[in-house]
Amino acid sequence: MGGSELKYIQNAFDTNRISQYGSNIDEFENSLENYLGHNSFVTALSSGTAAIHLALRLLNVEKGDFVICQSFTFVATANPILYLKAVPVFVDSEDQTWNMCPDALEEAVKHCIQQGKKPKAIITVSLYGMPFMVDEILEISKKYEIPVIEDSAEALGSKYKNRLCGTFGDLAVISFNGNKIITTGGGGVLISKNKDLKNRALFLATQAKDSKEFYSHSELGYNYRMDNVAAGIGRGQLESLEDKVSQRRKNHDFYQELVGNNEDIDLFSAPNSDFFSNYWLNTVILKNDRSKEKLKNEFLLNNIETRYLWKPMHLQPLYKGYRFFGNNLCGTLFEAGLCLPSGSNLTDDCRTRISEVVQNKIY
Ligand SMILES: *Cc1c(COP(=O)(O)O)cnc(C)c1O
Image 1 (cartoon, rainbow, N blue to C red):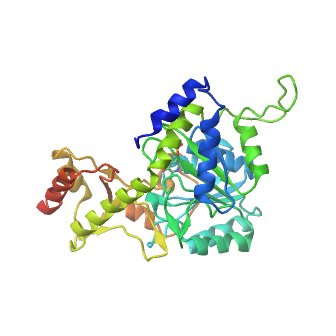
Image 2: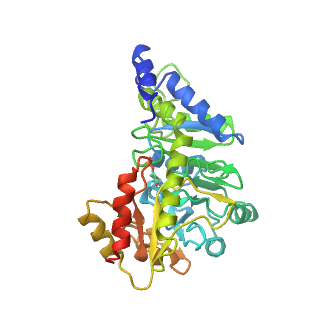
Image 3: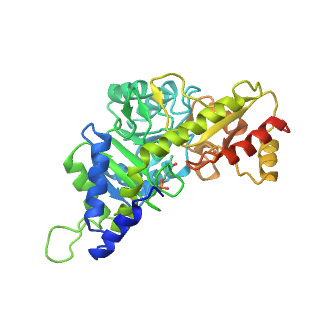
């Protein structure tokens, strides 16, 4: 926690507004809109997954529609496609940012068009906080007139060409789940580019109640609004965002120093200065037949938790049978990669212990 969260929670209690109305929600949305800039309209919701679901609804995705989705991601990016009984089409990563490969994307778009149906949306991800190849992907979006949903769940504070992630897509999503760079316990926001879309998201997020005196419903809605206590946590957390980004980037510097000269371990880093990552997680790829399992196990023996990379969607049992475009680069990354301890509160003592394991070379 950053320090001022309790103050905002107290405010929710003092005003007896602990549910889905209150000044914390309004102020949290306003602060995020100011922070993001670029004509962002923010709707605070109960999760990032809910935000992706609503984004697809705002684009009128329906049963049988194609939705293109980055394969290398957490399952929450793709699941809302199935909630709507639409058809996911998965796209591989490129090796610079590990995000959606523009060439594979165009191949996927052409395939869908050949099937007689232009995709309704492209869902890009900024995985582990690394911005995707924004210019290249947006060019294809423009060329084929297909809107982009930017899944920035992991990338709050990251920038491409000095512009914040979450401001590039026609719609964008940020998550405040407990594991993300800042949290509201559970929560997320949908970012749109005009007030009408924001209002439409709000309408769908609060059970789609018609503006009548009695309970009248013409459309299918959801209970997806963020509550005023969670938003209070969010307000406090936002005040410490810059600190947290800076701490995570220092973690990256630490790993750079640790494995920079290690010929068996590649640290995943920004390809050039256009890409500013919040380094939500630091990830490495093991080379020369070194074993990620052995390294993981050695960490574990020293009471240090590491995790596997996201397993790509096209390799998941749940998504068996859906089309995938690319050469399975993301599958290769999954096979060889590991996420290393990356919390904003990593101490010098932690770093020393991590260093010892890596330097012992039992992997
Ligand atoms: C966390 C995450 C989500 C989902 O957000 P929740 O708030 O947990 O629902 C979606 N996409 C990615 C890439 C994520 O990491």
